[in-house]
Length: 317
Image (tube, rainbow, N blue to C red):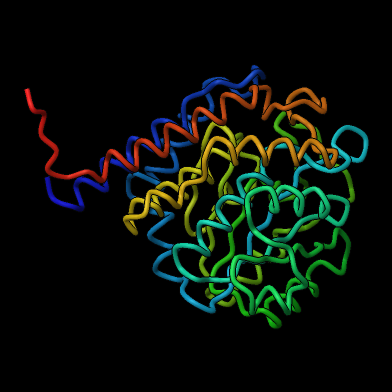
């Protein structure tokens, strides 16, 4: 088997794992695989995790900046956001920096910033003011996104200031053609939803590539705003799939975070008022699935990469 064939096989196993449906909500059943297959058809075939990881390696390098955004919430039910999204952003931001040397900058609603920062710290990525994050390795900054008429000008300012080479969305709701964003059940989101799509619209105007990661189809990327799209059972898992594919492409399985780190991130997310997005409860769950499930998926992804990269192994019997 050639190296490209070996990497393609690793990617297909990664994608198969993260698109297994295990969610509690009926609205999420028999959805993920169909979205994944449609995304494959639209992007020339899979594996989509490898497609996304190759795009990252193509566009990012030492000193370059990458924007990552997340945050799905409601002032009544999810006042600090949910447990799907922040862990995925934190893990992928760290992996991108370790693999490429690029500087990750994180964006979310003002009420979610503490939550995202705590989750990111649990992953092992330090939090600094942006001017310091641009200079100090293994650090990042968490910046606010506007929800009002200032959002478009803010996006222009952010891109002018930091000049990102790529923008990434993970579990970030996007609007339909009428400008209305919905939850997975079809309910319009709160009026104070940060308009992250402005970052992506402005990036597209400037020819900056983008990646969207989501699950139910109501997130940024599913409306073809992104250059690459990866649907997964949860958005966290989609981010972990890209992380695993990056680890495989650069030949460093250690870039994949551990189950222990996964649990630390979920615990930190809940401790700073993040909730399970399916039940609205402050429990160690992600979209109705216990933290143990996500920890197991992370362990399996690491094994897929480590064992998949082994060449020349022969049994002694």
